[in-house]
Amino acid sequence: MFQGASQINLDAKGRLAVPTRVRDPLTQGGTVPVVLTAHPDKCLLLYPVPAWEPIRAKVMSFPSLDAAFNPWKRLLVGFAEETQLDGSGRLLISPELRAFAGIDKRVMFIGQGSYYEIWDLERWQQQLDRLSSGGSPVLPPGMENFSL
Amino acid sequence: MFQGASQINLDAKGRLAVPTRVRDPLTQGGTVPVVLTAHPDKCLLLYPVPAWEPIRAKVMSFPSLDAAFNPWKRLLVGFAEETQLDGSGRLLISPELRAFAGIDKRVMFIGQGSYYEIWDLERWQQQLDRLSSGGSPVLPPGMENFSL
DNA sequence: TATGAATTCCCAGTTTTTCCCACTTCCGCA
DNA sequence: TGCGGAAGTGGGAAAAACTGGGAATTCATA
Image 1: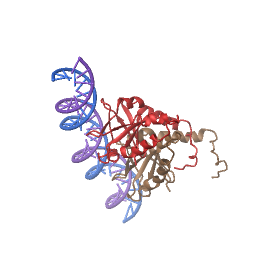
Image 2: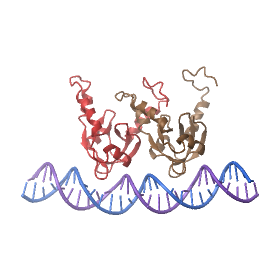
Image 3: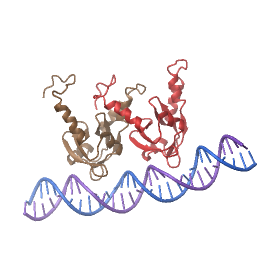
Image 4: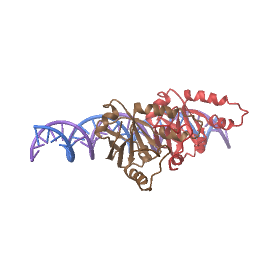
């Protein structure tokens, strides 16, 4: 169960130093590779491979002649890259994924249960503002009676 | 299982340098030829021949008097060309296929499970924007309860 | 059959990537 | 407050990959 937020700077080579306290839960002590992929909200998703596999399988099972599914498959499978942390616990983020998420240096690293989200810091703050400033946030169906 | 995105430039001769990490999976170490063909979304598809054969057979088996199938057959079979990577792992893309997909120089190379898609970079970004920009992405039927 | 053009194949320079090491900073503990 | 250890940060060297060009061969045309 991943949670918590960390503000992190990428170095000049595009490497992201994963916070120490999440390394072991994420990679099971270095034995498990991870997968980086893209999300429609223009952030990146980070999964341990075992958690990613069933999701990829589900996406791959979509009917490929139905045009509505193709953009999702292109996003989720098309951007997915399997990788490992380097000797210093850093994650190399490819230029393609950085470009997609608008990431250059400052990023936000957010636990989201079964995965982490990686946001460009500025974009993260914008999306926070949108939730807070819009008067009352729009509640999706099924959440009207949600109680904190 | 092909996945991942790479931005690649064609050289002046129309050659596309296939990324090293996908060469072996794609050609089984150079022993297997590949097939390039066209997709209605104006991108190209790249298959290892063994994966392509059953698909071509399936398309060829469509009833030819049903008008709805003919455009598919013309695209998938009509544009298909069998080829090989050159000694430097490059793929020569014919002028016909380049014209069809609007490819001149900058392309995006996208893994899609059993095949790769090759997009003109600009066209690729346009189709990404269509998924993200509409506020909330459009969920096709059957995907409403999909959980990442 | 000869000439020209286009294509294919191959080689080598240059750039990029990857892996590893070392230094600095921060934190805990004595 | 000083010391030890761990973590974050930056850099460098070796290896691999990309890019471009050039030569040889094939094909077409006169």
